[in-house]
Image (cartoon, rainbow, N blue to C red; front, top):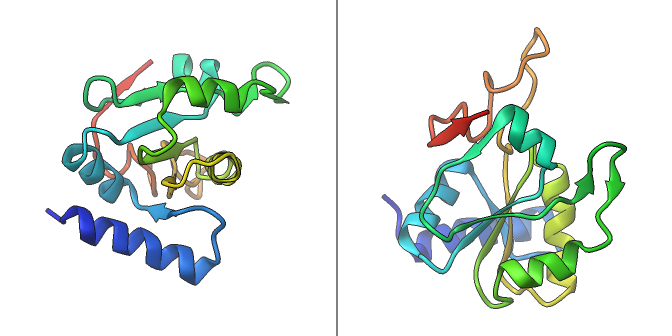
Amino acid sequence: MSTLEQLYAQADKRRVENQLPYAGALSPAEAFELLQLDPRTRLVDVRTRAELDWVGRPVIGDGQYAHVEWTRYPGGVPNADFLAQLKTAVEPDAPVLFLCRSAARSKLAAVEAAKAGFTHAYDLLEGFEGDKDGQGHRKTVTGWCFRGLPWIGA
């Protein structure tokens, strides 16, 4: 198991290497370790309510999970209340990990959170379901589920 310092150093290394405008990025395993080591850390799932209902969600410590849609379903309309809802769910100085299906929306959420003053905003690499395999299926190549981290299905 890593230390908090090692996890933050790895996230910061990715920030520098990729010129990220937020605190950094963590792999699913690193994110899970951070959640275990620091109870202030929040995992914010930015997928739609439909995705949670149809696909599932991570299982983590009590009070560490929040759901704040980046876009609304149906239609993919941006959630105009995203920042207001985020501020209700997470303290601005708490470490916050953004998660989506495949790590696209989570990057956008981390950018907006950092602009809004969340100084410890991180992207959770690979997402919940990860990339598609050769047959177009997810959860078989990368992602929270593929890495064997705890989750509950729909």
